[in-house]
Length: 177
Image (cartoon, rainbow, N blue to C red; front, top):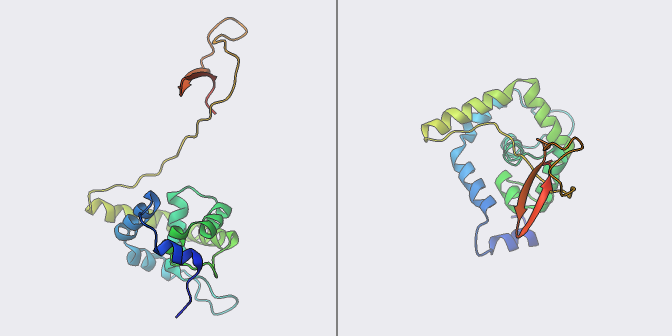
């Protein structure tokens, strides 16, 4: 039996679940992991030479979390080090985590064999049976910046790219970046 870390012990005694934990638990139940593994397994390295690869189920879960949270390879590595719920979802322990290069190589492996779209279709097909849908999308980040208080540009006309917004009791004028 492996000894648990302080982080794992603390995680087990928490009083409530975070939104991330609830979301990951739901994804764990909704995604047809065995079917996804079957689609990828025949291409996945067997580890007969060199360092043994991480288990396929683990790498699939890491890849999915990277997509769920739109994380770069280095950011995914950092998240695995920092966030116990993500390690738990992937079935990882702090003593052996994939680094950003391993995560990158797995992503490139999926791309090389055209498996990203195959997995996306498989997940969507399964979710549709449950009345759900998965879509690709993007998150837009808007930051309030300081700008002159005038709504007019040099020619005396309103600048169509400039907008105003209220944050708290203070109005801000500028462009969304």
